[in-house]
Amino acid sequence: MSPIISNKSIKKKVSFKSSINTKVRKAKGGTRFSPLWVVINAKDAPGYNMELIDRIREGVKKSAWKQLIGEIGHTEKELENILPSSISSMQKKSVYDKETSERIYELAKLYGLGYKVFDNKDDFKVWLKSSSKALGGKKPFDLLDSSFGFELVEREIYRIQYSVYS
Image 1 (cartoon, one colour):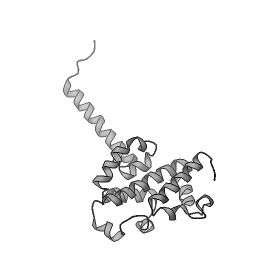
Image 2 (cartoon, rainbow, N blue to C red):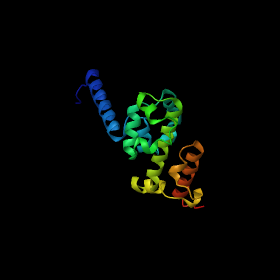
Image 3 (cartoon, rainbow, N blue to C red):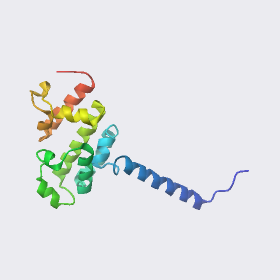
């Protein structure tokens, strides 16, 4: 004979499970769809492009930006030329504008792809700072100040992933 389970106990179990999932998700990579989440869950991010567009329109919070730079191991100063806003301007805001938010998500997506292809953060960072013959002798990191540069670097990472060298 099976025990009778009340709706109340089922609701408690579901809410407990939900709170555990939220804690695990936050521990693994920030809140769902944050820039940090995109880095850590790069393989899942393409399926959520519409959600990411909404997040860009809402603006990235300063706390999410700080989490991202902590994860990718750069300082704000190192990333200053990549962002369309100055560091001093960013420090004054709690939520960034659409253009800055979009660049932050581009950066998160690129690092997520790079970590996946290069297998570790350090190898990817070394590659970003090294001259690339395929990119005209430029360092990939130096091209990240424009959307076209991001696109070129991303294509080069995909070529490396699939062993298609130019």
